[in-house]
Length: 288
Image 1 (spheres, helix red, strand yellow):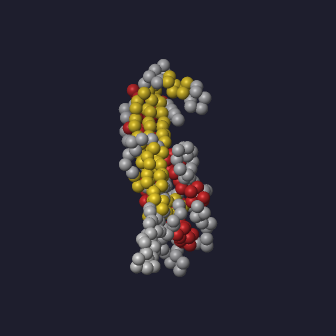
Image 2 (tube, helix red, strand yellow):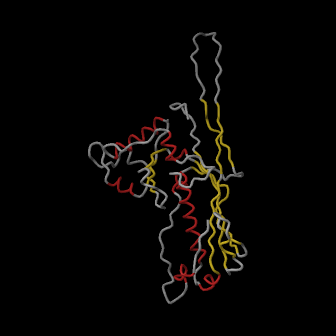
Image 3 (cartoon, rainbow, N blue to C red):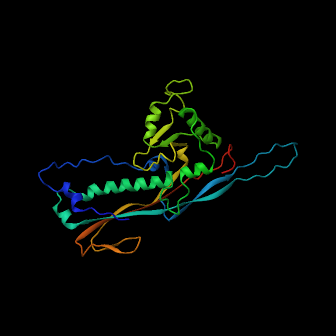
């Protein structure tokens, strides 16, 4: 995708006897990346993982001379597929020349923030999910029949959600949701009508998605053991300044900008990464 920074967009960066300080919002990072386990960088566009798929069986010996029975453990193969996200930001050379501020330095963290949001949307709710990615967390939860229709209190609803995780043999350690979850926790009461401070639910790590990636109309929150989710980077964020390229509209192939002809430069930003939930079987849940 591409987006344009025009002269009007950059006017506040051009010296007109105004404050040199640029006032902007806080940069929001990817919430999924902060919660998932990062694996070593990928050396290929696909990484294979060995995941426990079959547990050993233990037998009682009914007599002293009975033959020992054989058993085995088995591993399945799961893959992390790296997908690419990219953006091109063109800007007129005249704007760069007139600005007394490093425009690229201001643009780069905003692009990183937008990429973090894009990854979170694909992971949490499946928005614009690339083909190579697995099903998002919300869809996976619904497919597993582990969704909770709101009960009498939020406390009971979270407790029910935790029970689904525990029945799968894992310990819920975190809750992820939108910023509206903060208020819900401030006013939450336990079964006795008391503040939840000191309870197991209060001890859960709470991750608030504040980069705009969370859609509260789809779900209030997701409870889980987020240490089981992993991601890996094939290509970290790279920046390249273009000055002779032709930029086309990907939807119809029309030329949008000819940088050399239009006296423009553009910043091209690329990142490739993937994620997966290995979901190894365990003694409480022998099925995936």
